Image (cartoon, rainbow over all chains, first blue to last red; front, top):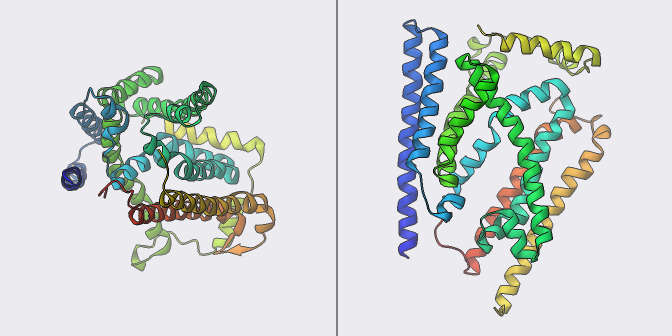
Length: 286
Length: 88
């Protein structure tokens, strides 16, 4: 019973922390907006935002440093479901999806949706087959669980190999994103940007393992969800004029015509030209 | 450990819900996905249905599957008294 009591106390404390954190983030945004009005150059806004968020993640990472095995691998098995969901959601929306997904969909259109489908559909399989039993078996990693469940090193090896293949592909995309963002914001060379970004990740995650990662991910989730919703709401307002018609500035009422034009397949010869033009405009330092 | 009949009933229900949800998952993913070209002739909310399913429909179904599983198992754990206490 005391376990349950301390768990609910832990949860309410967490809620309080992240509530204040969200308030702090919003006031930070307002402060930046005021600074922009007073004439802070855009480059500096970028620097301030980057430094503040990385500092924050590093702070959480250092605060949740630990030397206990179960804390390191599974965050002590006591992350409340809501927060765990937020952390998982932040993984969904990380660099690979933020940059890679938008680019993939833009470049290959309908075919690019295979990725969205693959990882969300795959998550169903994880939720139905692996996650509940992984927890009940009390193992730390999926290969460990497979080894304990099916008894044998062959299954374990297969688990390890697929884990390495999956995370390798994922990490390549992520690290590319990290390098891109770091070099874009700091003006460093791409190669050095990768190392600087990786050092940041190391500080955030190495000291505290899963515990640190979970709590930084929750913090990231709050930032990401605001960052995702703002442009969507803004675009929606501009296009539909709901709830206030005055805010509608984009008027392309013939949606069917636009839709047809946009959904026309781009000829292979032009695909790269379109992409490289965008890449040039995005990547050239201001 | 010898499993009591109660445990076995719990496990049967667990398998049943997994099978049902997996069936929905399979139909949504493979049967619909396989016939996407034919479905594209149908218009849904102004989009071709096959396209809509890939862009939003599947994701909604997947989220519902996971949600249904989590809720059902939580209730089942409570009924059979094997839950781990208040996890929030």
